[in-house]
Image 1 (spheres, rainbow, N blue to C red):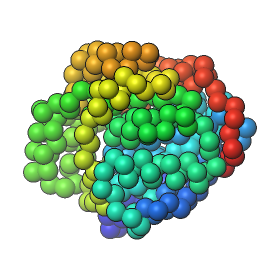
Image 2 (cartoon, rainbow, N blue to C red):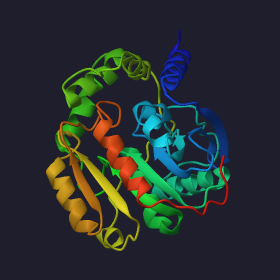
Image 3 (tube, helix red, strand yellow):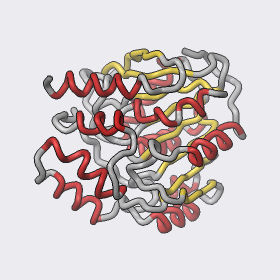
Image 4 (spheres, helix red, strand yellow):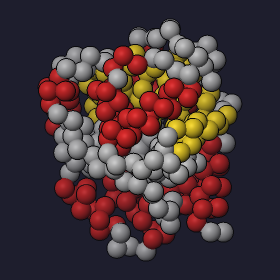
Length: 290
């Protein structure tokens, strides 16, 4: 089986692990079609989930059940990255294009005001969207966000480069093992990560940190979850910078978590944090649901 068929089979296998009924929709945007997986009650307030780079929308398998108990969940495959979104439209040049893309996705889903949650690269996109269109967000949850408040660790970036020297098939698992200290606990998720080894992203967008004055002016309710054992950056420093730059934010350090283990492993505490945060600021004016 070639790289793409193997990847899609592994992708579908993870999706089958979601504990709730889920359906996929393809949303047209100027940049290409975007795959979104939808679950939860149709009248639930909307939560939009943006994954970390290379993990796709299926990564939320350990969180979807808890969130979909009370919310309408929309899990997105990032444009330009792995997954079932197809980047065959306008080029992706910078953060502005990603913000425009996400606006088009929300419009295509008929969503007016949402909770937005992102992990790592997805958190960076989510924060950029919050700074651009705060009126569309009832809440913003950032899970071990990359390049949002603190520089990424030079050691982490160096190790990412050194991982490229390994045989391609070993790279995803080796990098995960280095960052978390172990292989993924879930066999189906391990196989998914392995299946990404031979894939290429259509575009990797540079990730400059937002300006400090823009962060301080951001009016959106925000939850920042730092992974205690993250190797992507120093968790305590990132948490301190988030508190300094977003004075109204709720900032939590998640014990025992690493950058690559959020949100898939030992998700109980994370799910509680997200459910409490989203539940405390429910938007009830939605222009439509999908």
